[in-house]
Length: 176
Image (tube, rainbow, N blue to C red; front, side, top):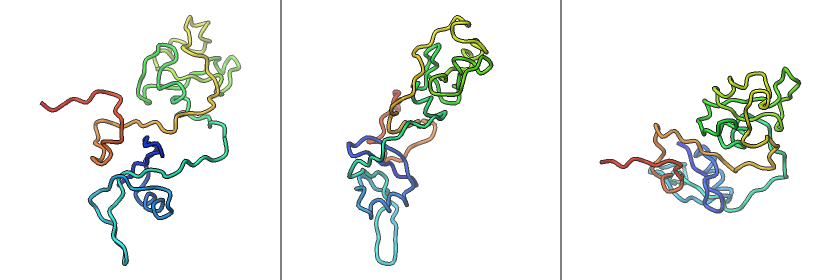
């Protein structure tokens, strides 16, 4: 069982194991918002398993640069191909070196964009200008990224206790 963590302002933050949620509860860092029916028992204590918890304070560590990674590049680019503008699932997107490595391009925030496979093949080992393509936005090092990006697979179900806290980005079909 997993526990959904909400920020202090009631926004979904991340998903953690229920055991970690219980530790945070006893440390006074979270409050329980929703519970599962299952009980957790010890010799001296019985409580219901936390389904949704909310952070009681904002935890800010030292300011750090955003780490360069595939998921962070995809997040910066909004899970969109930076050439054709189509939003796609993560598995249908890849890195593209704006200045190709064969032309001296480096793997850095300022030279990597998200692209779909057809646009990546069309551009090949050329710059966008050489390929007759335009970038939606020049690649830049982000100062920050959203706290969390939730990608829920609608083919699997989420716990009922999370339903009020997870915001759907697409329309759900109603049963007839």
